[in-house]
Length: 247
Image (cartoon, rainbow, N blue to C red; front, side):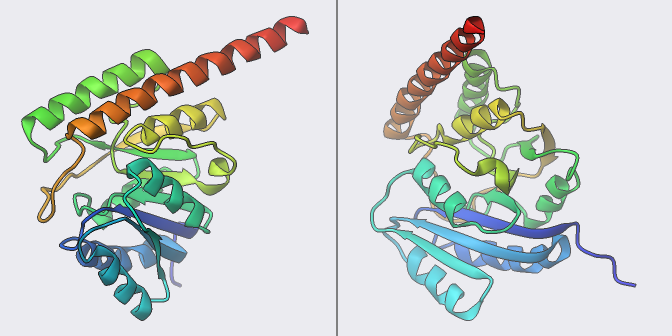
């Protein structure tokens, strides 16, 4: 008797910006892995206004594979906007965010799935980041700031490999357009009472393309969106306290 897959259905979405050297390899890895973990699956490539052949390659893959579809942003709108578009395009009961840069192995998704159904959200933790030293230092500092300001008890808030229960994402107001999207998602999911855990995952060196997370423009946008989110959460908290006091 064949053992059934752990999940009834999973959508994996790939935010991509100028990933022509990675997208075909990443999609092939997912295509090999997903039938092992889900009865039904789909791969959603979000081409965030790439200036290279990312969109063209993704469209070619989609034409040959009914499990793969593509969402195009005519212009680059930022990582957060790509994540938001990816979530909206996903249709299966479980959703996986997997960055399209090829730094995560498709096989590690099974590590996240192993925590279902005990947990609603499973976040990858890059125990050994394959990034330059300064990027690793900045990542640790950013995570500490998230814990202090937002109370998010996650060690690797920006890890680009996460699993979500689809219905918990419905109706979430995602305003961040940049790197703050991960913190915004986690803060709102925690506020909805989601059960969250972390598991160690591998992190591979980037084989093609360039990282954009360390650019001054990206960093400035992240801090601006951080303080906007912090203000929104404080106002929501005060409103909740006022409502309770009236009762």
